[in-house]
Length: 409
Image (cartoon, rainbow, N blue to C red):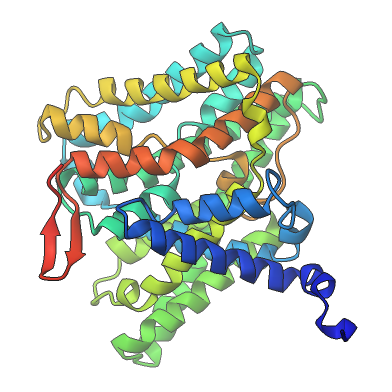
């Protein structure tokens, strides 16, 4: 057989491997969806088969070659998170908005105390706790899109994703500065590190203002029709991501703010969502495929690590539910549902975005092992629990033969 068409050469093509993984994830996901299983589990199965747990075809070295592509997918996801944040509602909703903010701090305190009590160094516990404030936008957005979910609790949960990410970023700036100045390999003084981390946030916000201003100015000067504005907005998002990448500023904050500006400052009709829905759906699968491929299920074989990870997962859900107690707009069932829907975790890479494939190495071995176990559990459990939460809220609508039909859970 001609070497040009040999299997070995196909396997050596990073683009073909990534494309094959994406194809497998979509085929499995769409098949599972026919049996009422969340489509995102197609990415889980494909990632485990082709990643660290399975054949090892998709690894960090391969994904590094597609860093910019993955960053672009993350940009669409994070922009959508910001686009769903209704600042006016958060400010005027009283107990509802307050309970969502309370939930972010409740998760932080509960996780940090749990990690400290099970034996991790308090510095590591505080650092991991700041990461686990945030809710994973890929999982929630994918479940909401698949189930066509809408309603009061779904709206609040969507706002929670953006709010938790912002709080996590602020907390992470402080804890990162402390960890780097007092951790195992100190690299500087706390004040200097805090200024450096804060500078990344400020610069990311400034880039968002510049990029959104560029989009607003260009679209108005050229009198761009509504159907063409998504393309111009996508160009602005790529400019934003590129500037954040070369300046090492906070891409997460910058992309979130781009979405917030479009939702709260843009007065013209927004047609962005309808035109890029397919691209966002593929982005969800691609990013979760990457996450599943980098997960090693062998990290769950240690009994102590597995129990500790399960404890953190459970404590985080319980803390969220307790924090929702003061809110009066949702009944008990919806509060239970929201706590489940907010169960998903993000990694450190998910919060820095422009460096998604590089895990933070400043933690001690036990903390690193537990964080790996948490992310493995997140891949296996969080999509299903999020799906269950949306169904429990009674706000999901599936497309059936006779049109939309409400779930009967």
